[in-house]
Length: 81
Image (cartoon, rainbow, N blue to C red; front, side):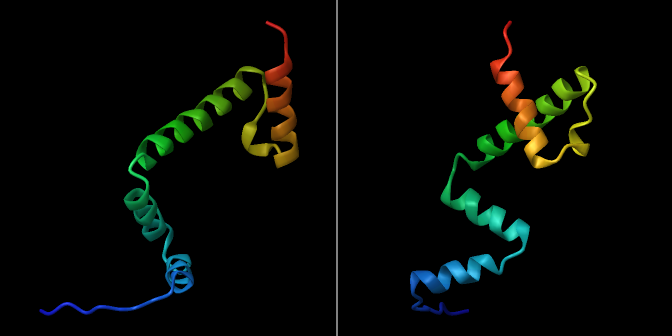
């Protein structure tokens, strides 16, 4: 099998990446950002913690709208210990 060389503008490459599946985009990110897996782990942990903290306070995180989530987080950040 021989190699084929394509000459593409960066904008064309970006458009091609936009057309990838979610898994394909994730693979591109992992390739470009070696720390991506750590970021994903931290994000997953943060999401789990928010669900747990909300549950502890009798709040169903999934039922909150985005503005309600922001308000909930704001209240957490500004409450006194």
